[in-house]
Amino acid sequence: MYKIAIFDFDGTLVDSAPGIVDVMHQVVDEYQLPAEVAEHWKTLIGIPLVDQVEIICPTRPRDWHQKVVERYREIYDANSIELCPPFPGLLNMLQTLKRIGIASTIATSKRREIVEPVLDHHKLMHFFHLILGQQDVTQHKPHPELVLNTLKHMTLNPHDAVVIGDSTYDLEMARNAGVDAIGVLTGVHNRSQLETAKPTYIVENLEQATELILQGKKRVA
Image 1: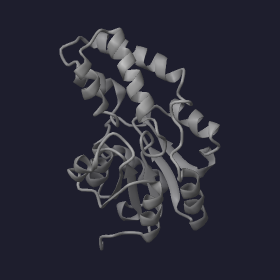
Image 2: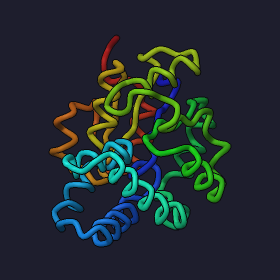
Image 3: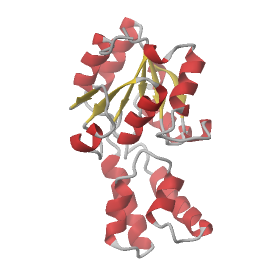
Image 4: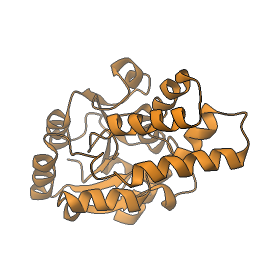
């Protein structure tokens, strides 16, 4: 049986993708960028915002990137709770894992100061043993640092863990850490995209993910 479930946040625990994309479109419109920039931008959900902006506009100077990041955060932070409704099945999943003794943690590219108020608002904070965010690592997804730091903090090994995420960045992070991965089709990446990251499983929703977490490891160590 797994001892720990390491969850991504956006698109995995909360249905934040529509709100994130709306903010992206607002920023693109304000800066009079081509419409295709927004389409490219949304495929990058899952990595740090600064990296996203550098990728979508690589020829722009660093100070311009920073202004875009600041404007995005200004819009998003003012509405973060409304933009992050929990997915159906989240409360039941967390209650089940807690009852059985499987630790729930979060490994996200988002800042903790955005994640924690959302969890507090929905009375979910107490379910999580650990939350690691953008400021807690120097190497971001798909680098395995978030997972490895989580395991170190919890005094566990890779074979004890499973990562649950909606993007290829989450699943590649898990693979790079030597950890099983469950891809959920609740975010911006579709099945064929998730398959490229070679996860252990792909499921439609959190209910199906819960069943697999409870079943334990697929591969024999």
